[in-house]
Length: 114
Image (cartoon, rainbow, N blue to C red; front, side, top):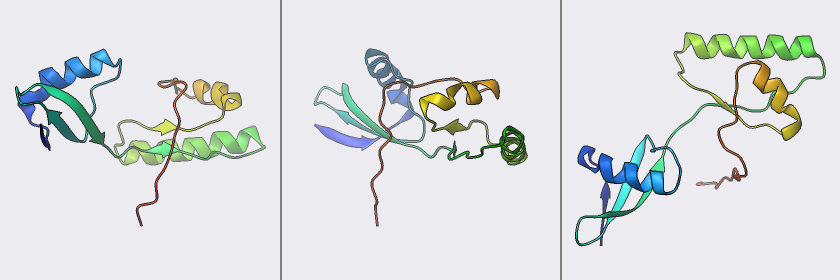
């Protein structure tokens, strides 16, 4: 067994493995595990993503203004993608401003590394 950083020539095997698990091919820093025959049998990826969370307001006009201001910052900073974490009852709110559900039934967890 060999553990190492991803190389460009790993793309095909990593793509096949991701398809098997019905996930998108990861971006960012990737480590692979390959068996003695050179077959990739495991991967782990680390990436930085931008999340909007929380968005709190009881006033719809305030909600729209806050979101518009944040969207302006994202556009100005050339951030290509933003995600949000929201409760199910807020899904329609985020759908109206262009968000779509990309993952269902997954936990969002954290670990303090300090």
